[in-house]
Image (cartoon, rainbow, N blue to C red):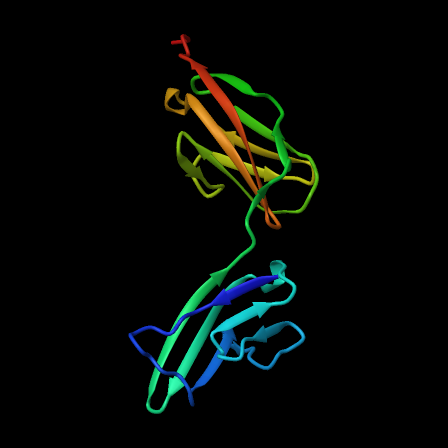
Length: 179
């Protein structure tokens, strides 16, 4: 259950005789009594059974005579940590110019999004010299020609349904002494 409430603003604001309408996205939900209830004054919406399908933007519009006012709300479930991924290796070493391969094992659960950040920078498969493979049980980031700038750490983040998990892998590198 989730409660979304707005209060009239302005000293002595009077909304009696006004029309209060609640929206989920662009849909008028004021009369959808199976899913929502609206208080007698119209300023409080109760979402009867809160789940991920009910997350999103809600809006309350009040019209009194020729004046109107709106309040917008973003409603979401709190994220909770769940074990979704774990690093295959906690640390990986490479030789400059060589391939650097980082892997996380998927432990189960629904993963809606998975991404990598290395030394604070988000990595994309569209980046030059980068390959990201996303399999059923494994996610692999490959840097085709690693440089000493890649030394540090990479964090893989997995977002599930109301859940998240991260896995950090430490990276060390050596100069390539071959001339």
